[in-house]
Image (cartoon, rainbow over all chains, first blue to last red; front, side, top):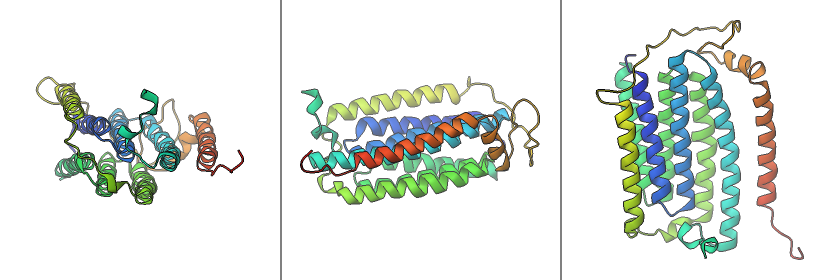
Length: 101
Length: 180
């Protein structure tokens, strides 16, 4: 494969940028949360590419731990969103502004 | 051949990620997200991280996105889809930030004066586990070896983290009783 490290890091950086775009643009908490997962996805792609081109296994191990932490984070975050919906009947961030008043 | 595969999978990843972000329907967004995760797993295969590709499909595209779809359909948040283009301030701010981040990434990793390329190192098929660092291998055996030698403490901490997350989910989603 003649594709270099920079191409993979470019894809990872663009994934991170798209995720950040979604976090700022969207109002739906679930879509914001999916965009956060997209940012994590970009980061783990960068880690795997660095690990492959560096010739060590450590990046892959980090990705293993990141995936575990992300799974725990998604379970807890979605439980919080469901509890929030039960309390306020909405998951739109522009309607959840009690703290800003 | 592999180069073509890289360009195809990278394009599908970026396009489906962008579709997820701009799709007004959250369920369509989740499906685009699944495509994005699967093509990222394909990029992992191109990087010869086969075990992580399998984990990515099973955990991310499987468990996490099924949980997301379940919650999206349970809460039925699609009935109040606010217009994306209504808030000019948010739209301008997000597009400006996105463009700046894209220009930054492009200027560092593409074009004439990008960072130096490193050559692709040869890959060992079967790890021996000897030596100081853990060399890159394609087998899942080196994951087990690393987890139980160099990364023993993080491995155990991750186990406790999963336990804490499980207890946290139970506490958060528990219905409060009437008299409390």
